[in-house]
Amino acid sequence: MTQNTVRVRFAPSPTGPLHMGGVRTALFNYLFAKNNNGVFILRVEDTDQKRYEEGAEQYIIDSLKWCGIEIEEGVNEGGNYGPYRQSERKEIYQKYIDILVKNGSAYYAFDTPSELETMRKNLKVQKRSNQQYNAETRSVMRNSLTLSSDEVNKLIESGHPYVIRFNMPENETIEVIDKIRGKVVFNTSILDDKVLFKSDGMPTYHLANIVDDHLMEITHVIRGEEWLPSLPLHVLLYKAFAWEDTMPEFSHLPLLLKPNGKGKLSKRDGDKMGFPVFPLEWINSDNEISQGYRENGYFPEAFVNLLALLGWNPGTEKEIYSMNELINDFSLEKVGKSGSKFDPDKAKWFNQQYLRQYSDNELAIQFDSLLKKKNINCDLEKTEKICSLVKERLVFIKDFWEQTSFFYVAPNEYDAKVVRKRWKANSPIFLKEIIQKLNNINEFISPNIENEIKKHILDNSYSMGQVLNVLRLVIVGASKGPHLFDILEVLGKNESIIRIENGIKNIKK
Ligand code: GLU
Image (cartoon, rainbow, N blue to C red; front, side, top):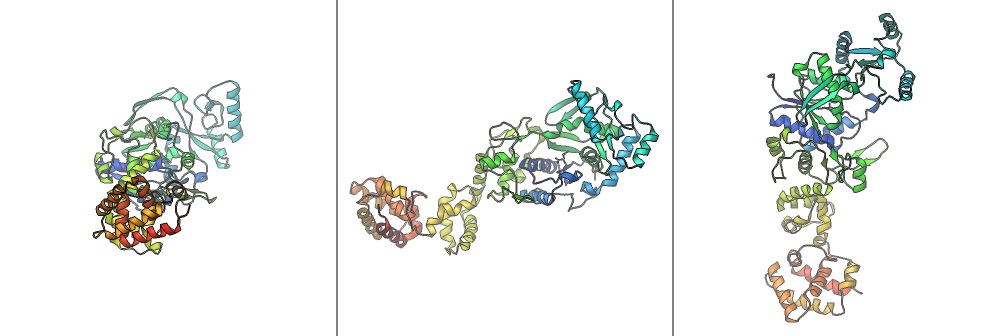
């Protein structure tokens, strides 16, 4: 592998289902990697045992697979830089934290929770805006900077709980170039001495993340904006290890916002407005179900397409992108800085566009299996024709039955509202006349039927609206459906006439 091969990682923590914002992060990493002939890696960051949730890792893997995001190195795929699950890399972190302690970049801290609480309270009383463990406060706490090495060794040997903190420099300016945001500047005076390692032998996110990015030769870190505040610490860690030369380039993606643009898109917004925020359905340990895009009937291609355009703006009118087109066109330079509003209607629009790309035959094959489940046998050609008539009205495959059931099953009841509004004393009379007209048609196709019926209406000076609405009512059972004469053609002469006769018999005001 050459030195400059692009290597990116998606590094989720398996603490629950993957939010669609997380899927977008994975997608942008994947697109960037593929656009640069690079490698996409899945690294599972499971060092926080308290927040670990059973099944979450598999959920993440399944979600990426559903989206067509292919993992090249990872927990299941393996690779030359493994293991790819942080809980299996404990010894590695131990070695690296020792380096930091030795070179003075990190130190042991023995303060108990109550001592930490007292420190915070005292600082509050002194009205300090900043109540952190930092350059100012560390000198009065119990740590390896204030205690003698004898005392430190004794505490460690006696099994006293400790953490290892980063020795944050005082008042230093850190400048980093973010590929999306440009130059970002931080001052260390507002940062605390973050915990890097705990006495249970586990690193915290910060240490494990930097060590792994270095060892896995990650060239670009692409992650959510919520990690931007951690960036100065990460840069300082690279310095502390003397790894600045191979430090990855950073890109922090903008947030996904609620439909009204006010704040981060949350599960609660989805629940309130009836859209999923997770790729796949998730059932938690309390048996609470969170909706998934897959189960809601979205095509994975549509989901990927809509996610890609949340934040990435190719600057053209084109909106429909296949994965390959995304890979070809993607660049981090075209990712915006500001949050992207999620629009649930637009999400449906994307699905509709993908549904329309299917041929009538492909759709008919899918619908046919749905019909079989309902014990309805219909020849594929007819279903294909029905597909051509209703295709434009469908958002999801699952809408098909709702839009077409009347083609397969004759109405056995009639929409009461329409009956009230449209059914008149003379309705049976002109319906009987229509039966006669239909009987006269030799080639029973939509334009012929339309001509014949409309001519009859005009010849008798009937109201077009009145007759056609009543005809639709007896054919469909309601005032919905595609062009009426197209429906009659699909049903055929016999079935159409039977339905009209049934309507005359059964509809009563
Ligand atoms: N484990 C972090 C997360 O859950 C990774 C953040 C990063 O990419 O550095 O998002």
